[in-house]
Image (cartoon, rainbow over all chains, first blue to last red; front, side):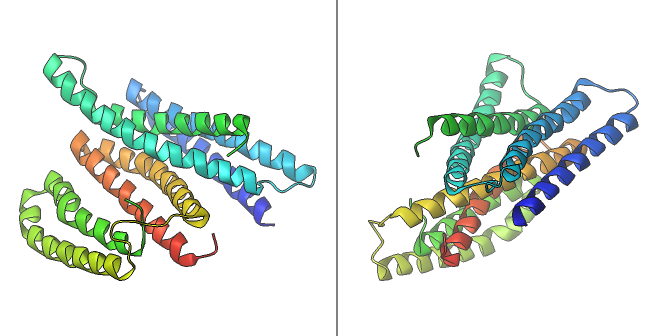
Length: 138
Length: 130
């Protein structure tokens, strides 16, 4: 019951995000690059979440629990690695901006920094999750 | 530094003394001047409590870590990352609308990252059934 509820909540959140993106896109008069990023990031995340939901549904259909002890441990491990990666991504972006100012390179705007942190963090999680799932032993 | 009953106080004390004033300074220097002393005093009190607890628990120099503490560490970091992920996006949209600087965005984000991790760790540690 708890697992079904989890899947329903995740699906509802995904649908809500898609609807939000559609309304945002319809409300914008002229879509600029920054607006497009605000649309693309949630869409990538929703697609990745849908892949996870699909995996859970497949398990439930054959009568298995949607997430076993091993999968939980793998998620925790991937999440922990992503957390540390996110810290280094954030620090790295700050360093880059400091060097870029001095070396006359392209300085990232606040919006680009936000997009980079959210997107890279999500990518890190999916990469680590995939790697640990493939590796198997924890 | 391993997170234990004693180090919670020490880390939160350090955050109150050094990180929070810097975050506040990013938004208002006047407010930072007003809050600096109360935060410093509160930080020192927490630091003293933490050191006293560490001495009492005999964990001043060495902390024993077992399978349970490892699980608590990982689960706390995992849930903290999810919270930060959602927070970074929502706060990012607000920062974009309000035209925050990179420093204002990053300082708050990193502070919330550390604080949420400690709070989740405290929750799972005191919950006990991990």
